[in-house]
Amino acid sequence: MAMLIYAAPDDFVTGEWLPAAPSNATSLLRAASGLVRGATSLDRYEVDDTGAPTDQRVIDAFKDATLQQATVWSKAGIDPDAGISGQEKRIASQSVPGGSVTYREDLTPEQFAKVVSCLCKPALRILRDARLGSRMPRIL
Image (cartoon, rainbow, N blue to C red; front, side):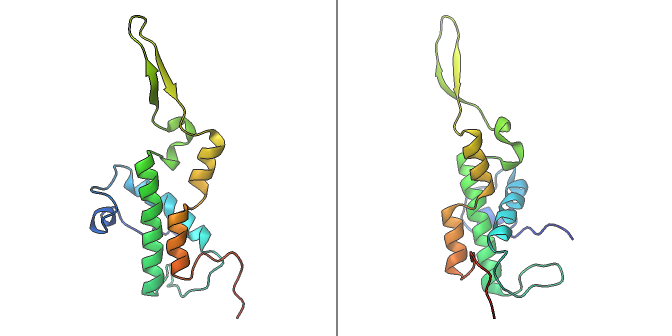
């Protein structure tokens, strides 16, 4: 079964999440979709043969939560696929005559792991507003 991705790169612009889709939009959306799927794994909703939700309320919540997560990563300059060592280095200080440059680490490896493995609070709020993102299985 193919991995489900709940939003498309064009949705960043049409939904007014970002003025333009990031260059790594597809990989951000793939990673964010995985977190949305994980956050909703205990929820009950109708799906089609591919496992995608069929109820429009659920479809919209999955899409918006995915875009919210990917937008947060994009604005923070975080690329989940690149790992901690693949993040863009930022200059903390520099001096001239000797030409030294000091780079700063924005996130520790532990912080990075949490940022790329946990759904951000605004994305989780989107799911919860749609009565998704349960912490325990629903019993009929």
